[in-house]
Length: 307
Image (tube, rainbow, N blue to C red; front, side):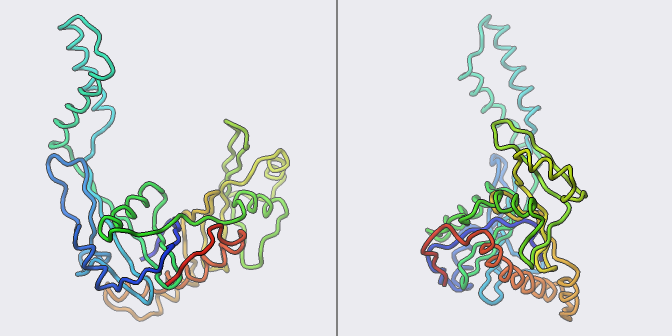
């Protein structure tokens, strides 16, 4: 159980539901296979998968959730081709032009016909609520998918007041300064990947991987005014990630020293290993996230409430 990407939210009110009470609320919308005429369905599933029996997995103050989405696969090109073919038939038969509104109606008809015959795929979205420290941490690289999970929570709970985490100092400004000066806080090391971008509209973008970021070439880009929009970092020699200008952590990777600790937990069953990994991961993130936030000036939002 190791998250790969992090989108961070702050709870603006204490979260005081016990895991058992939260379980009851989530049972309002469990996952089920998508029906014939449904394009998609999302519901809650067991975080432990086939080994689990509950919709929540709790360790300490951190409650793990898993939303599963199943959706029909409708290739856009196939839909477009069929719509165009039917529009052409109408134009030839009735000797008139098919207008935009009628074309949209044709598309809706085509979708309704294709959905029952379409294949489906499913995916899982994990997140955990840290009630003590006031975090919602979503394992996603897509803000849209993260918001889907939050909407599902709100549907089951009635309300779930959270806001995206905002830091006071612009991440791209801080990361640009780190790379320019070649200096970072003691526990932070710069890796070998970055994205540089001109701030002007349609400005140039330079993506660098597996290169020395302190080379003359990179320095020339920085001197020309490009800003660092993504930067590979390692924190305390324990966690590596790519931080972007929105303060999202991508391609999270726990270093060998952390994984070795997980291996020493003595877990034997899948459930025991899952729980040990989860406790270790949340413990590492509970150390990383407050410190990383502080390095970027602290939180912009005032009056954050933790349980």
